[in-house]
Amino acid sequence: MVIYVFDGTFSGLLTAVFESFGRKHRQVKLVCGEHFEQDMFSETVRVTADKAKAERVWEGLKTKGGKDARKQFYSAFLSESAEIFQHLFDYALYVFNQPAGYANNFGNSHVLAVSQMAQKVHREKHRMEAFIRFQKSGNGLFFAVVSPDYNVLPLILKHFKDRYADQVWVIYDERRKYGIHYDLHHVHEVTFDFKPEASPEQSQVTIAMDEKEELYTTLWKEYFKSTNIKERKNMKLHIQHVPKRYWRYLVEKEDDLRV
Image (tube, rainbow, N blue to C red):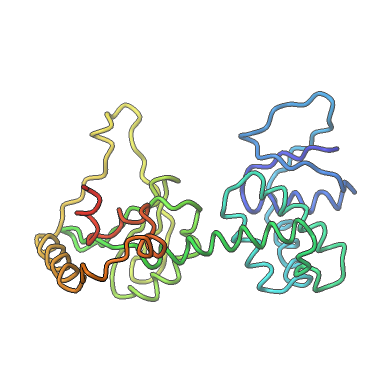
């Protein structure tokens, strides 16, 4: 068994697949660098992400599996699961060693694992698209702070770019410490650099709210209450469609969160 240590990036994972074929290694344990513990009894290969090698593997996956299979592959990677990294690696080796079309052979454990994880990531993507609510700052910037289970910002940016094409907005993932910013023309990845010596209170992003934002929020809450028929309220069904962990994003659920 050979251990491949990669940097945790998508390009790094694809490069690891390329290297396994070049080195003729078929039994490989893939480990992200931050989780790696030296094993003196195993051969270790440190994989450096290489854009050219990664692109060759990426194009090969399209040829062998098609666009949909490749999309599932990327979605599963965004789960950030150490276990799924190994499945993705073995999935790629399996697909390249089989005739075209075998990317849909769910009898293979790696194909099945990648497909199931991709479905979970896409469910999170759709929930973020449905539940994210923007707030408006005093300078006209619309912003939202989220903490999704998976790294879905790369998957939701097109939806929000198309839907809010006339607004400048930022969606910030507080769990992964980065966000996406739309400037009316392009979407950029952004990060906030907090000074380490600052206190937690000083490290918070302070944004002056638009004076009308509170009024709009109040009006929306009143509208929500007026259309909500208590006699027909089915909380069990409601939670199935809107899990409690997403209530923090919905202004109409603020009162329920206090209960």
